[in-house]
Length: 157
Length: 258
Image (spheres, chains in turn orange, brown):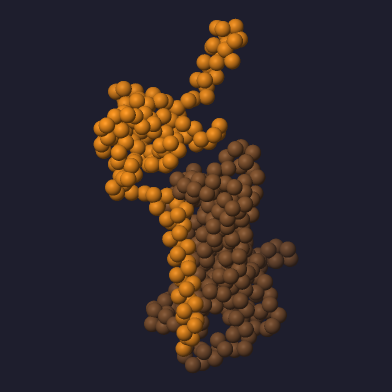
């Protein structure tokens, strides 16, 4: 016969193990933030998305409000199309919201920052954000600086 | 000629051991229906194999996480990338350290105990006694222990990783001043459920099978003397550790190698 205390300790052990697994799945991995239930999708067209990736954060005023769901390329307009997933409680973003691709720190990851505009109408699911600013590409900036320097006799910096 | 014969004997011994180990594995797996009828045996063994190992796993996991955070912070801060601390701690724990270190500790704490127990049962002729009573010692003694190890190691690995992440959080957010919300949010965006967690879990299961199997085989095949049991116990720890490290390399190459 197994002692009752042994049974209880084994039960606790199994429970602790399962709690640990659940914790890893929900808190550590991306499983907890998956699913588009309740939230909505909007698209933003960029000239260049830089190193933006799927699952990159979407923020307003530094607060995370969603993530990048998908990035594709539109062959007709030659633009990159980023589909943004916005969490359900942020459903009152103005229609003329401005989307910028920003970089966290000098070498950090890229994310999308939204600047709310002044419109009284709100973004609907499936809407397109028209005003965007592309990612800064280091080579372009350096190229521009060199070009300016050559033109302006070294006063550009 | 002598050297050649010795080399040949080593090869034959190796294959013979491998064959016997697989026969034992097969015999243990065939005992699963008997085990279903007596789940109490399994509960008893999970207690001695799993529950008693929790303490060392918990302490080791927490401290490994804390050390990872300290060392990771030192490197990351040089690149102004402290917000990646959570990813670094969680990825190294979930992918590698959790399954591997938990299995190594399991081999040292529970595997050696299993071998000594089975070896002593053999030396004191308890296994032979069971056979005299028409009870199959493999099904009655080894199968519950095998499945107890198989169930315990993944759970222990998960506990190790979870406590390590918490330990890293304590040091990172509490001591080093990394942004607490950033620790979790960057971790959640970068750690993939299938790519990282499930693969780590598969590793843990494989290590659990390997460690328990080696421990039981060494005990079952030990010389029935006090010296033989001692040697078998040493062999269990050495072989299990080598098996875990070797298997880990192969599994990592298969899972994470492009």
